[in-house]
Length: 384
Ligand SMILES: Cc1ncc(COP(=O)(O)O)c(C=O)c1O
Image 1 (cartoon, rainbow, N blue to C red):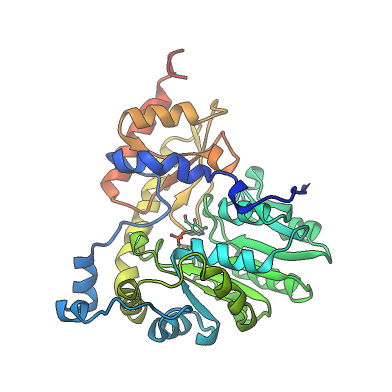
Image 2: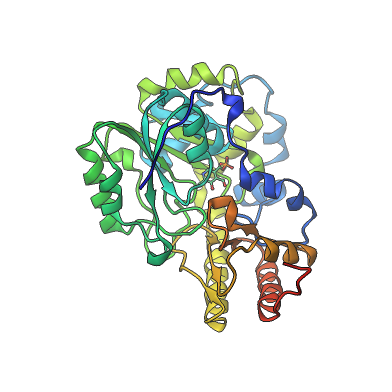
């Protein structure tokens, strides 16, 4: 547990996003990408064939401004998918915008906020630059990062303004079991603060069904979702926020200076996707399942060299390697061989590496083979 208090600052003082900085150039030059937290991307042609969208449908889109909260058909499609009322939906540019707007509308300097550690950085750095005092709910490597609700109880106080969580979790792939989810809701039911529930990976689960939206059973819940991860559409830049209707005007006020609204073309495609979600999700979930088996088999074959907490959801895993205290050198040597991964330092764990297993099976196989080769061979002094 820790409490960090932040000096008042401006938004421009936000900490650099370490993951984005690492990927910025490398992502476009790597030949074997096993860095991503999403599944294999779809093309527009794939979507059109799967969803029956004709060129006439595309031609009919008028490039007018969309409503501030998103077009009604898409808000209704999000509502149907999540169970929350359409009046609580704001369509956003990915869940990144949803997180920014919701946190900016919610947090005041000095507020006490609980965040996970390791953490997807938006969830902590936005709160921090807004002047929040961060208390951490730590997921421990010794527990294979499995959430321990007693640790949450220990950091929650009457002054906690919001609890920010992300399950299934990036980068570890851990999630709450159904029993823990019920207990988690019980802990928050008696608490006056808000819950910010980042459900970017909610559709990607392996050992249990997806967790329902906590806003169905609790008040003061802000959930975010996205088409970027399980749906294979990160470049569409469509996400959403589900928030108590009273918070939406405050979010809209900020949005008016930022993005104003989303594109009607993106909204049209997103509506079609959410009306027939299984035809987009199904193939990618099957591939992610098979890739996960391949990853787990690789970890078993490399017992003694690789320690891999079993991802229960999402498409990222967070292994450590025996004798390697900082994987950054290893990531650079992979990069020289065309393989892109993410150093754990981007998540505050330099001894770990994020491996994305949602993409092409052949990329995963080749990337893991190259990694195995490097792990078997001690580095020369020049390579460290
Ligand atoms: C946990 C989590 N939340 C939110 C996002 C933002 O994704 P997007 O803005 O593409 O929806 C990401 C992206 O990696 C993520 O991992």
